[in-house]
Length: 231
Image (tube, rainbow, N blue to C red; front, side, top):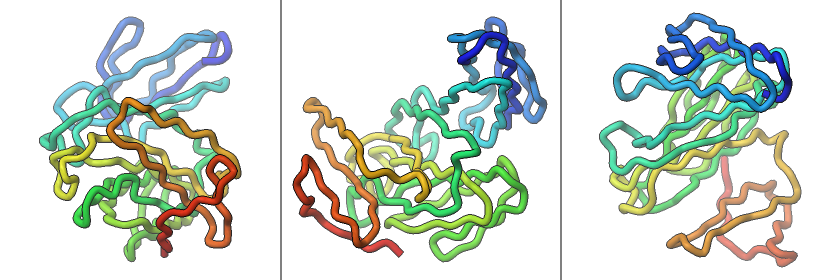
């Protein structure tokens, strides 16, 4: 929370276990808690593996930051090796969009695929992607498993999250572990970004999505890399 006396209302899509100062939250029932500036609320689902909070609605009487993630997620299934920590700060619904270009984050082999989750905020949202049309209600989602970059459109704002699969997933070539990246809508693209690449990692790569006519520069030098047209 950013302000004292902030009321945060959570309507979880899965049951949330009780903790210090936090009551058990049944799925589908709103619970309101009070936070002061600098305080946080950490929620964890209870029950069997696979329960998650996708589609949970959170509202607050003052600005708050919300992060979603997992202590050690297996992707695409709970039996796929190996797990890794996932965490992303989520954008508010007001920043969701209707037009996206979704890249392949880690092209590890010709059989590689990723998991892309699309979440709706409004009932009757239509999502067009990969030659298929999906109808979603508020808080509902559809999982896509693309093997190539693609464009996505929606009739109402949606959130798009892309996941890299685990090293033992088909097509992964035993390279890398799960990762989670929020895909910004086209209206949120920018002109200038700093990059960080650790020298401790085995390999680093950058995926850049840009309009076809754009010049893309890295350290003021025009990038000479592989270009893929996205339909």
